[in-house]
Length: 232
Image 1 (tube, one colour):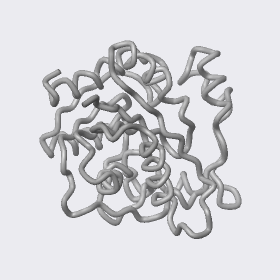
Image 2 (cartoon, rainbow, N blue to C red; image 1 turned 60 degrees about the vertical axis):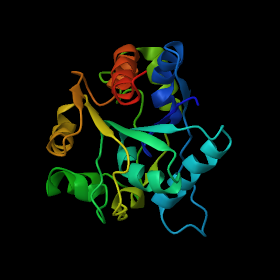
Image 3 (cartoon, rainbow, N blue to C red; image 1 turned 120 degrees about the vertical axis):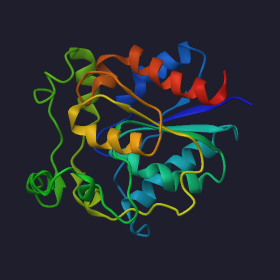
Image 4 (tube, rainbow, N blue to C red; image 1 turned 30 degrees about the horizontal axis):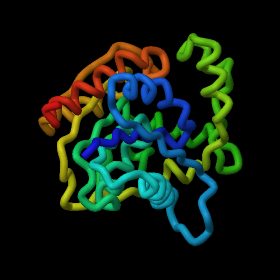
């Protein structure tokens, strides 16, 4: 049965952040999909993380019931354990790409390296919303103007609550192999945490949006993790 590589974007950005990598993986022969997360949470859903898990599960329900590898960037990393539980045994591996590794009952802000960083993040919000990056903000991080424009076109202000809410981790997790791909210095501590847990770890020198800067190398590293697990 075909493995489905599912690329999950941060709640701060849109699915385009994964599109160049998805394209490279398809050229390498992998089936890929990029669920779209958004923050227009319906009133009957209590938490944003629950809604984001629901969106991914709904997206995958339209695909053949194949085994899944979940690959998360940035703030999407904390969703992986609850996604694994929701997908009921379909997940054959988890990959974090410059992403947050969850800790049971902690928020994304709790996972920041220092309280000063978390405080600055909160202070950036206006009326409970974190402002979206502009193309000008991203010129250094994403040099290609066409890619930068397409990426910025999806950006919307994000509710600060997305980063403040506590997110659980099931006691039975991890239930499949895990791996970590680091780009930036910001996520060095997360990569160290992965190494402490014995996960395979790799490093591509770059900034947080290196998946848009060098999609080829990013796809190559993701493929290497999956190949080591699957023996493909």
